[in-house]
Length: 118
Image (cartoon, rainbow, N blue to C red; front, side, top):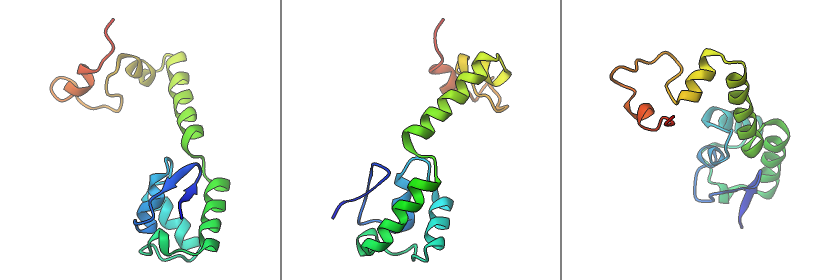
């Protein structure tokens, strides 16, 4: 029995808490909140959940959370908006540099290496 939630195949051998994090947009804390709301043990494996539990999780996740493609699109639109208004963070995104105040003289080699060449 393959379990699919939000167009993502959930691994059946994993604990419910970890398996839900395979969905882009759901982390460990969100997974724990969802499981607690539906009174499902977080240590129970996905293959051991009943069909009713799985359907309840599916309904909760798909109706409440912004996930996968929609979330990625939203993220890209936010970055595009920052670039268009020429904010500090926007220009740092354009130049491929760290944007949250990290030092760049010595520790930003990875960011500098992948920076777009002009």
